[in-house]
Image (cartoon, rainbow, N blue to C red; front, top):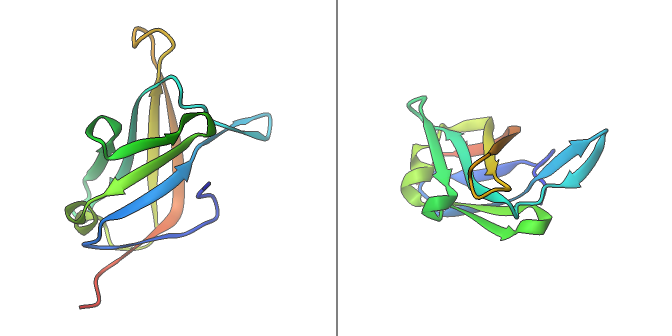
Length: 124
């Protein structure tokens, strides 16, 4: 799913996956971003204390679901959702590093998903 114009709700203290489809824009045409040459993917969120929470592919926290369709899944654990900054209209980033030559030369791509997260406290 492309998260553009969609809101995602995360309840603190829950294990929560988020599915994301990445696109690249070429002359106002959206093309699926092929993840075949990715060597690192990270998803970056803001924590309650103002620092960053980085979830990494190398740690299994971000998983490529379908590389040719640009599909990834970000996997939160309870302790990670507990640390997120509460509120609505929260933003996050996804950063993908790619290489065509086994990491000798790399390119970094960043997607900003603005004001689409709602982080809720538990009711009880």
